[in-house]
Length: 72
Image (cartoon, rainbow, N blue to C red; front, side):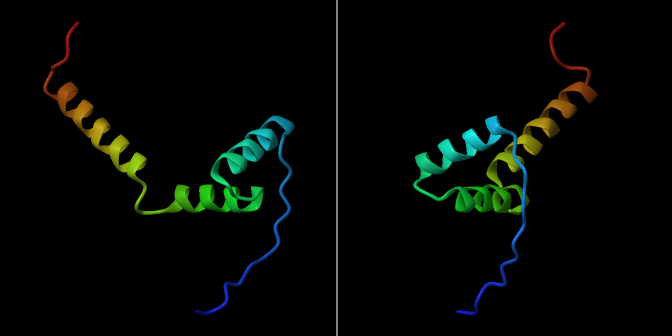
């Protein structure tokens, strides 16, 4: 396996966001760094199930609106 080219990046987080990352990391059994990386990778990933679901729901909603459907 080829080594991964990692670069250091310094990020300033508000205290409340840092606390949320720390809690999420503890819940998932990861370090804060690993938690941040996992969330970034998921947000840019093609296999994001939440994104696909949102697109499907929005498409369905637009179809209903275009047809003049929906209750008023």
